[in-house]
Image 1 (tube, rainbow, N blue to C red):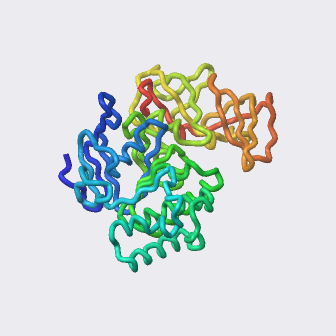
Image 2: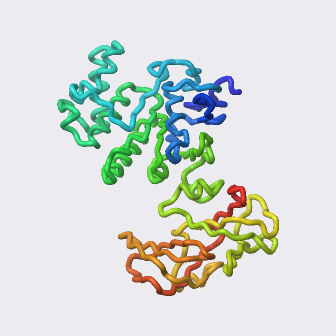
Length: 366
């Protein structure tokens, strides 16, 4: 077990476990977050991401392991003594206080001098562009403005580590997109360590320096967004990231791992880079993202191509999502919005298997 956080590490969580009674919620997690890093904890509801954040914040007592923040063992420290600022899903603003009072109240309780409080409130409100709102009460603010104030309340604490627990999930799609950009700008300006919990893979991909994909209290994969997107370690990670999701075709790896067969469809694997070679005839699942499919006359130039019948067409505005069948499985690909297709139309599709992902019977990457 680590004696302290490594140099250059902002938050370190060695051998952390958390049980609720006989239920193991977090299962021996090891996580190091670098100074100034934006780490996103991503996963479905109940995977343990908010629980892990609450452990780091000191809102939950852990069963085993330790928590270090800036080289200090804070495992049993109170939340106020951990040097963190936290932003929750609910804005948790005091309704009877103005925005200015909401920002300054915690500092006043801590006994900070008035001049210093005023400077911090002024700085935070300028960064978040909420100066015109300082004399309003929360009831007079929009959802996006309230969330800016909630972020500002963490910002005035002038801490090293910010924790965000699904801060945008109560907002509509347009506001989520706008505030996502603001949070990214905030991180680039402050260069503080930020740990951000979400179930939204678009938020994760756009915000993170690294993503920790969680499932059942275990980190499945921890890496840069593009690395996880392009080389998922297992089928769960592959299916969780991407909108629309990755296509999955069940079949067998044959001919000395040179071909993937799904019914009458044979996909050459000469360009695929195996991480482990399966036995001949082993069951597997081939995954390929819709944006990696080439449709039309250019499909013939791909290592694999086949004619398919269009079943459903979904116009998406900037492009069109087309659904068909491949190897007996539902299969989606993208096309330019200008191309007009309808159910029953025949079209050639193709792809390069080097962009695919193969998973074995254990669902781990082959």
